[in-house]
Length: 413
Figure 1 (tube, rainbow, N blue to C red):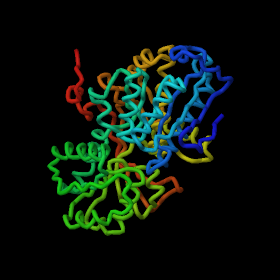
Figure 2: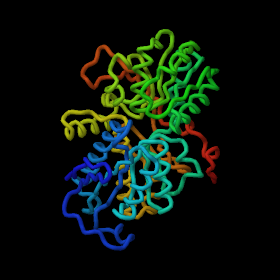
Figure 3: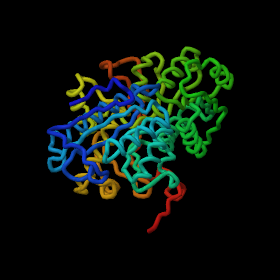
Figure 4: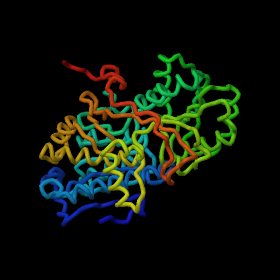
């Protein structure tokens, strides 16, 4: 059963089967066997990332429905509590604190911002509650922000930007300009491109930064065009990516310059349209069109289509699905619902929920996974969802991540 989510401040999607026991008074008892397994899900349902966040909610809801339909853990059902972070780090921390102290959640999964996931992690880490982040960040895995209870299901900027650079720079040129959203996501993506580009002989001709939520890019594009870069990298996300792609296309930047982006979002492509995104390539954690070659993708897509009137899941939506299922599988493997034992089980998990084999790296709990390189198309589309060509898939490989030592983790042999 799903409660109304129209109130963004007290949003709560509850997906449960059977009766829900009344919450016990004591904090620890609330997490004991017998009651529902509660997972808090803070995401930015309002703001420029709202389309991606709503897809995360749909996929998380599907994961919980499947878990409950299969009997849960020894009959113990799961309950999903969604909260709107409003893409604000303070709001994210407040909602997470409420989820832990008032709603007595067992675990937290969510976030869709490099900044808000760090504030969520600060709250969960202090209270020793397992948190599985489903948004890109390099920082969350670094020793200064990490704990036994911190997991990162999403790709990270170093891995994503590196994969796109390794594919695009040798093909399209070495003079690179960046149009960068001026916050952690944009900064980390540029760093990832530059580190990979150094080995490829790439040169940064400009890093032009814009505020999060910019609507008009006319002040930035002439400067970039005057530099005549081989490649323009749009290091932004969500509505920012849609607006900058449209305006760069209208401005004529595609003439002589290849436009790429670290994360080419399915939702952004649908919102921006075929013409604006035509020929733009980028990385993604998932594309539904992989179903012809990957059995788990087909299974996930079919379940999503059945649940949502024929729709297909998006890349960031799929992270909501995997982030929930990984935690719930760890509950089964640990035969427990306390964060310490479930964290230990989760760090040992090997899984394939929707895209092929994945596992969490032991030193920092980063999910090691493939990166898909896609290019937007405007012709020969089989249906409205057939928006990308899959150009390449870089296989899961720990060697493509920053080393554990570089991130401040002590590694023992």
